[in-house]
Length: 360
Ligand code: NAD
Image 1 (cartoon, helix red, strand yellow):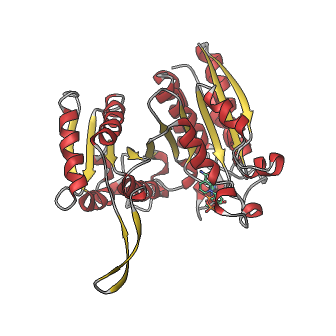
Image 2: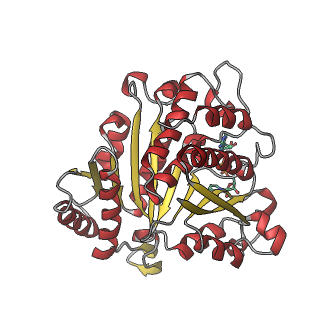
């Protein structure tokens, strides 16, 4: 098969990690007989420098004409003084809107070899864990009516949350489909003992669950979910939740895995096209020094193969290669933390993973 991929390197460490991930993609193509045609486009600060805006029309058109998008990261101190809608980061909202991406998939995976990097006690994470948080991305309280008004005690502020059945159904379906591709267990997180939106959320999820009898489904209140994530993260597989609860829980879960340099993400809409990127930023403090951990970007490619192209074996080949390289003791500086040992550079780690990718 032939696939068109838009490569958005962006700023800071973006170029280093995207190029490392693109090399892995090419290796997968060679091993499995696919052709990935990668075309670079400008986004973020480098686009401001080159053409005066963070999201050029050519970039949007190129992404819309592609089967999927691989993004590095945008931003940096050079552009920090610009107004909000001219900053590199504004391009992220623009490209998500242009591509109609409303589902955010954030895996929090603790590879067994990195048990010591987790802030949790090793007996709690002895088998590692592999959680996928499915977060609604374009609705809920972050997008509701808000403002200031005079209340009983003077000035007050308000934010409102609303969710339509349609919005809940589409994120719910994405979560059930994701669960079907994994171990078929889904936890829906809400606050249905208090919030009306959560009661509609729960009712809609229950109705959807009837269409997925193979999925073992459970509801959980968000306060309990926050506690269970640190008490026993291994109990979870897929978690689906609202925009705000997902924002908070995914950051909590990501910290349990050790380094931000390990975490990939996918943003999806109605079709198969998605945008895949690490959850970290452009890391200006280490940019251009060949020190970045390329694993989050490389695992983003695995997500692209799985969620946009349905290439499960190819995705597993990449994840297993990362697993083997970590098990062999290879570490970039961020994974060593304060521990002793010599750190691999970004390009050395990328080469180790490239060498470990095999057809399985
Ligand atoms: P950051 O994620 O870039 O960096 C935080 C810390 O983690 C830094 O010490 C950095 O060196 C380290 N780090 C991040 N990724 C790493 C990797 N792959 N390997 C090793 N270490 C890594 O967050 P920040 O410093 O708050 O933001 C820097 C810039 O990135 C800002 O301009 C911010 O707006 C932008 N940003 C962009 C995105 C995005 O493009 N999606 C996301 C977050 C932040």
